[in-house]
Length: 261
Image 1 (tube, rainbow, N blue to C red):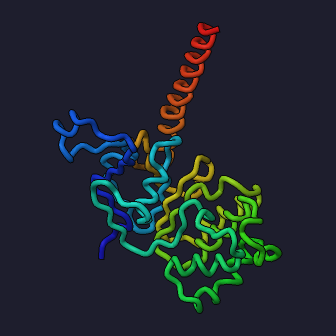
Image 2 (cartoon, helix red, strand yellow):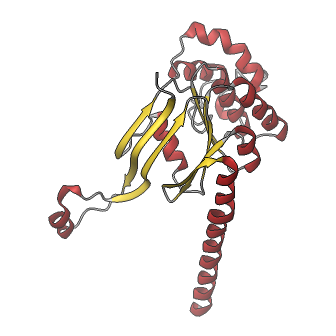
Image 3 (cartoon, helix red, strand yellow):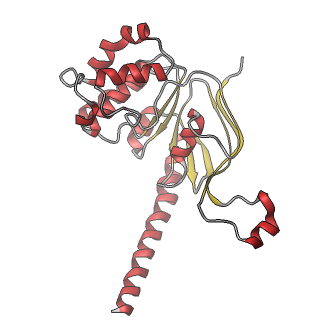
């Protein structure tokens, strides 16, 4: 029996652009030239069963792409991905809801997608609704829900579905403070012993949920280890560098505008 839950070996993902290759490029590179932008490059890592791992990185670092590859909703351009267990979480909780259907109907639809039979969904339906605190809205169309309500419902579904691996992408970024605290407690109790991959910009949430962290920078893993060291690297190097880049870009634009005027 393998001890790992997720194993990636030299994984890369390129998003192709619409720009056509020139005749020169075709002659030089032939069909081997990939035309586009690499979202992930040479990702090799192993997440063991029962580990809770955060993914840190600024916008555009490849966090969501990495989760989608693990989940299997998108394929890597190169490399190998092995998932050893059943994934029961949802990326960007609530993003997969059908807006014309009610909350109750979406619970059944999501349950089926996650491999449950209708009878199994019947057994956990009341618990899902109660935890989400949406009893008064559960039979209303999802299109009438706020973003916080959608997250609460999606999180509750992920929480109550029996699985080995749970992927959570910024699930506690919206909603009221009280529910966020409740959700953090639930992650520690309901998901105890499961493999968790957690994306959040909140250092507090990351420390509360995870023991390890991956730091992504421009599509590459620059650190994978204990959560405190990962947060220190991310906050004191990557975030500071990004802030300087934004500041320099703003100064450059101001100078260009002053010249033109």
